[in-house]
Image: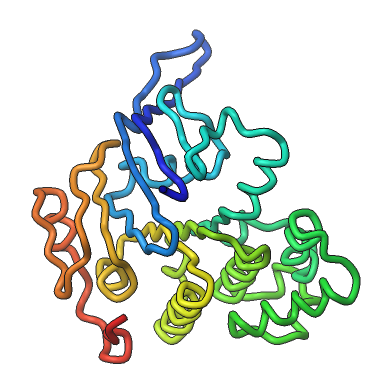
Length: 266
């Protein structure tokens, strides 16, 4: 059974102007996607192809125009309140822009502690201890818990967002260009942490990226999108070989090979 799936998903956005509503511009067309427990799926495509829109649909932030998203084989639109709570606990997302994903007036302890309180009912000392544990897991210090977002670098704040996603011990984490702003050393550290969680807790990942080097290093299957459609769905090989026109175009634009420490086999 799939952990999270899209079935025949269409989605679009209507433009509005002074003369009224315009036509709907399609963004996704006939998308079928399955994410199995414990797998790491890469989602590739050029900017504007619909990757981020699909990720928002998968976590329930938007509703598809037609088709459906299913969590553990249950359509999202049919979930009861308790089942929505289970979805929020089980599926977490890390966005590319960390500053836009946090409350600038909240301290780091509050940012990471919010899902611990509302999704895990963890309070007081237990919550504070878990916040410190999560900060250390992503390479930050316990003292960072008292900082505000503007007191941190972009890379540090992105690690705070990763810690927040890890907080409720989810079954699936959607990483939307989530490590692209980190330096190479931190990318290695974060990918190693994700792999450790996968081994120990069967965490699944949807890894949205432009960096095919990281796909080859981290993922077991890759899906390529073009103009709102999935055009390729294939296991990851080392070296990675994509066969569609869009896949080859993305591969031709790949960055130089990774250093050897990032090319460790799973």
